[in-house]
Figure (cartoon, helix red, strand yellow):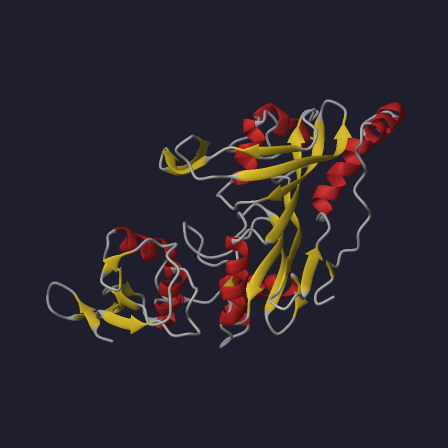
Length: 356
């Protein structure tokens, strides 16, 4: 791999420049998104640069431009353009503290996948100002394993996150997601008393808008189809409602934007939420967004069912206790008559019915 040269013609020891490469997608690599494929072959390149070379059309699949979401097929020919890399010694490794934290978040493991109870505040991958995330930490902990993210969670969202340990498992899980055979449920606290009952919100979302250079998702008829089912779980008078949300699509910020569109923004959401409501809950101890991916379920080929759930993290269940304790007994009784139910006490370990 030749070194890039400075204007005087001398090698710059701080940078390496790759040449053009033409790679053929193998059977084992098939089914990956183009951006993930490139990230694997350009491990020292920030994810933001991977998106930039795709956007500029420098990456070609079978001689044509392709978007980052393109699913690669066996024998596809991928052109990877020249890029500049930091030398391996400068690329760095995730901090040991992050690796240990992510290893400790694994709640289920078999030959096909890992399930993490992802902590809030940790990105799923590096990029956009974040050097390392969950996947980089896991690869550092398990060098040589072909680990891939099956799906994503926002940095500030906690809960169930699937990591494939085999390419074949990744392909099967992605196929299930494309056919809506992959159920994802979230627990979310929203502003005010939800009086819409069980409500399906079918509102297209535009994920390509930016405000002040920052990605902002907005409802719009020209957006991508986006469907969420909201169901109230517990009422806290007129202050807030705990909801369970089932996603039928997986758009960026989908729950947050759909909740705000319904007039009930998510607690602790600084982007789409209500500042006064957030401040009230901050005074009760909420220091993050109240959004937790608590349940995942699907059926593998052959009919093997897989289901796993993780309880609310302590900082969120503590807020629930504070909201319950702040209300008089009569109001708490009214909550149950209105159809709500308090969150069940749950162990800190996730529950799984894998393979039953």
